[in-house]
Image (cartoon, rainbow, N blue to C red):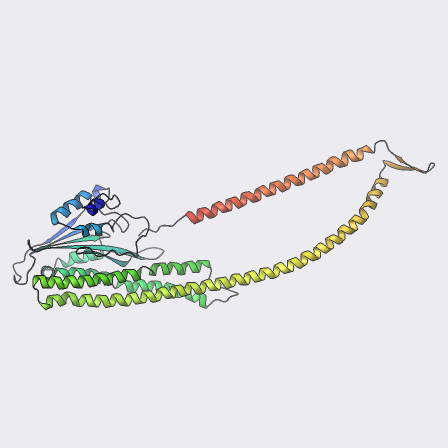
Amino acid sequence: MELRTCTIQNDALFSRSKQSHHVQLTIIGDDTRQDPKRIIFTDHSQLSIHQKDTWAPLSVSPEMISLLADHHKLGSGFFQILSCFKDRYMPAEEGFAPAPRSFGWVYKYSEKKPVQSGTPWRIRQTGLYHVFDRERAKTVLIIISPSPTAYFLTRILELLEQPQFRSTIRTSPMLLHPMLISSHLSSWREYLEYHESLLLKLDMKSACSSLGQPLFTYETLREVREVEKKILPINPLLTALDGVIKDLEDANRNFTHAYGLNDSAFQAIQAPLNELRKEAASYRTQAVHMQKRAQSSAQSILDSLNLGFQQLAQNQNKNTLVMARSSREDSVAIRAITLVTSFYLPFSFVATMFGMNLVDFDEKSRNLIVSHQFWLYFVISVPLTVVTLLCWHYRMQAYRRSYLIGDRETMEDRKQGESSVDVEMV
């Protein structure tokens, strides 16, 4: 009851738009043309609950879920499955496959979506919850789909229009479970092939480039990491699927024993489950191989980038050494010029002083005559020196402020770039 209450009160699970609330019901009644000895369940009800899209909440109300749970006596496993179809804004839990509960489970698979740019592959999920009511000779199958036009749901509805398939479902209702797996399991091969082609193209850049003229950059490394991230969920998902198949085999064995079915009915479910397990194991092996290959490619590109950076650092060290030698030579030259200037400066000053009209030489008395306006020389020179020093000080302060403002703006732009996240809708 606690799990049911928490699920019903979870606002992220149910759509707030009442116009979008929709539960599709399909009922298969008794067929008098069928052999009554082979019929176990006379009625089969199929309820379809869906999302608007993979990240949207369920198109159903909490009251409707409570009504269905009470009417069909649904257990806690049903609410555990419902909790996987909540509203999302990021691709969280892509590698998480919940454990089967009661007789219900969630199947995660890959599906191709038409897009104009970017990867066309998405990871979606479909939930099944099966109720067997032997007292009323009735089975109830609840399908929770990621969209109203999901492939498995559309396929089941088309097959239910055939009388032979309806009879098969009443005879072997367990058949619907391997059908869900087989509907999407082969898509993992195309999923892996698509990402392997991307990885091969990126490997070619690394193989055809040299240290002096590399064809790859940090963007290439980011693309390889993106491919690795897309491959990463496959192994845990297929491992969880192997556990689900084992549970389905046990359930099929118990179902056959409980209802006294013959061996042919048991093998009709067991044989496809064995084939599906082998197929899933091959995809899991390929996924592990591609994951290791992506890691190797990323490490190779990273090593090449590091070697390039080391070569760049060596070249910079050589340039720094050349600049240091040049600076040393310039320093020696400047010291020589300073020494010569210091030697000639007193003589230049004295020559300037005696060259001014403020100082004159009296030929009769053989004495120097200094003008009474000699003070003008200092009155003009000292303020000009002060003004020159003030202008230099103001210019240095303005340059320092502009430099600090530029650094601050660069840091803010970098923080904004790191905090921004691109969210790709599915």
